[in-house]
Image (cartoon, rainbow, N blue to C red):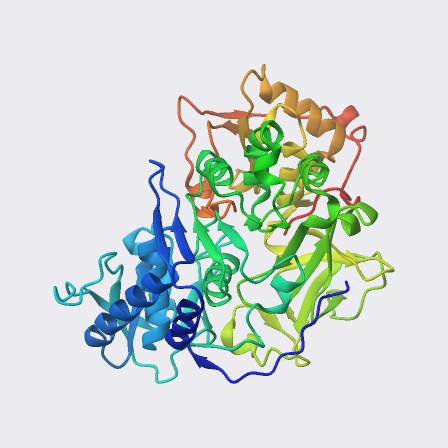
Length: 524
């Protein structure tokens, strides 16, 4: 992919100095907007933002002691944004996390990074210089002497979330803000950008901080479809990151009010597979060159990027590496030829990071290539396609089933609003449980899906039972909440419906997709 380049030379300056410079250029410029459900909103000018961040940073500096880390339950609010910026300005390591974290889960995540309690609350601000927006979070302690600028948590979609350390943003460097990833997908300075996904997620945290430092108007919206649609109507953003699920849910609004979304110079999607029909619909609305797909992980081992017109030429791909080398290796870690499935390894050029140290749970080879646990292949042009996650492999008596791909097959049916598959123990080995949210008006969805799976999956890939639920448990970033799915207990309202045994004579009739690549959807 051809990427825009800018020759810059600069000396990093403290974060507050950068905010001062921006306020000096246009003090009344709107720097931060919180779009509230009531419609009143919170508007903060560039001059007000400097004042708010400085006051909050001073309060944090008074409260912190050596080894302190600030944990912030991070909602998409102006108060949270100011708290995060203030922690960076004060040099206080900060960990924004989901407000949905149960206390015991948060403790488990913190212990994994060697952070200990008891957590202490922040003192009330001094009335003489208190922050009207208030501060958010609690302080925990670490015995480490090399604490980073901030931590972000992995999604936890395959287990307990883990904390990743980062060292950026304590100062502003014009050579690094905006970063190449954003510049390669339509970012422009002084733009109006919408943050409609949780700001504790890596892409949205980066978009928040870099947007503020680049002089943008950053609009913070709630994460529900209705709130996001309303934010489009009110603010007409030029740049945003969405999940495919959110893209699908606001599509009726976008079609009915195209003028509210056509100002988008770039719509970036990430986190989950995007149904082809949804992607085509957005490309029709905006133009293919304005729709981008990004694949990577919080661990920062590499990233791929794909523009809509490139996706149309390479359907199902997640793109080519952006400052990232891609290797697809077999079980003996030998290179696979183009078109052959293997484990995907990435190596980011010039990152200066050591994945094996920052994320020891990932497999890192001696040459620095690291795998996020995904399987896939590359085509002759170097475009990457994903097959499934290695964690979704389920070895059964008569073959290997891939739970992610079975979920894709289920979600492809018109009667299914959402679906995922999880393994459950059975008397003779693991069973496949399909958890399905049917679309309104679907008649006898279990019987319909049995026939659908029999036509598209091999016998050992077909779900053994179905659980119908009104809505699947997903994280705020749109990924499956694996803990909640595994803990889901069938009830009288949502019983587990077993699938009758397939007659022996029919065992060879279904079409198998065990070695078929889904070219129009792939996990990301």
